[in-house]
Amino acid sequence: MSITGTNFISFETSQNMLELLQISSERYERVPLSDALGRVLAADIAAEFNDPQFATASMDGYAVRHEDLELGTLSVLGDNPAGHDEIRTLQKGESIKTFTGSMMPHGADTLIQIENVTYEDAKIRINETVEKGNAVRPIGEGYRSGDILITKGTKIGFAEIGVMAGLNQVMVKVAIRPRVAVIATGSEILDLGENSDNPAQIRSSNNYTLAALFESAGAEVIQLGTAPDDRDAIMKTFETALASADILVSTGGVSVGDYDFVKDIVPRLGAEVVFKGVGIKPGRHILVAQKEEKFVLALPGFAYSSTVTAILYVLPLIAKMLAKVSPYKTVAAKLQEDFKKRSRFTEFTACNVVVEDGEYYVNFEGKKVGSSAILTNMLNDSALMVAGEEDKFLEAGTYVNILLLDKF
Image 1 (cartoon, rainbow, N blue to C red):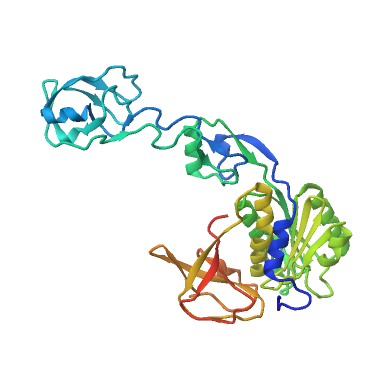
Image 2 (image 1 turned 90 degrees about the horizontal axis):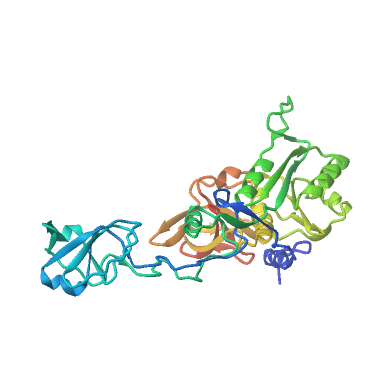
């Protein structure tokens, strides 16, 4: 049973509810391979042939029959450059000079590298022998016909581009990017470029932080800027956004103050609240709602809170729409120092990650303890450490889960 309180569901329950949401992930388009970087595959990529399709030299040397090396001297029939359709068949005592990437001649089973022989008068003298099969790539060494090389849901990087180019993939089937509209609400918010003599106003960063986060996760972002605390204005903006976006994300206006309008506006949009209030720190006043196949997420206004909740709740929706395997990577790490929880909720704390001998370690050097507005804690390749509801004091050496933030 959760101990988070009467009005809050547990973090685990909220994640299960997200997972159960029915979201279409079958929308796709075909784009040229040169435009596919950063997109998400909508279909498996399978090999149509073996790689290599024939035994291939992996360095420059002489193609030989291994049993002939004991002869000490072999005649050289000529050259076999890369791309040459070699049709000669080696007989006893013969060799062919063969270059990197070339098809191995018929009858040859070994390549002896240039530095192991001395060439003179169309013959080579064997100075140092090699093992049978030396420097020869066998058929199918890279992959076999029918092998699934890249799975559906993979974000396409440089390696995927290279493999697909080798498979002659001219057009690539990719998931259509979900459209995410982002808006920051609050009369105290100044958008970039705006000026004010009121020292109580603060510069907007949430909508730009989240736009960058969602784009890195594979979404197309509609930047709506800022909106003052006006019910009618916010309502109109939300309605317009939902007409073209798959997900609407707002920051601010979701807690319990007199000017927190968003929580009241969402039901008026015809959206059904999936849940409101989760036992997490930061961000416990988060609201998630659904209108047909579209979603509204109202996040807290503080910069760190809105970023953490966007990672935990918006990225999974984007991942589901793209049919990605997971929205982020979670690993186990060992605490390098003691950690004391500050609340009775599930906490997400910015931390430093160190990798030593393949193991992850966590420390909090340079991280400031304060309000949920300190976004600078997420600089310098930080991660998020998860401390559960039941955790209170975690000693150095304890294993914890961390969310890696370097790849989405």
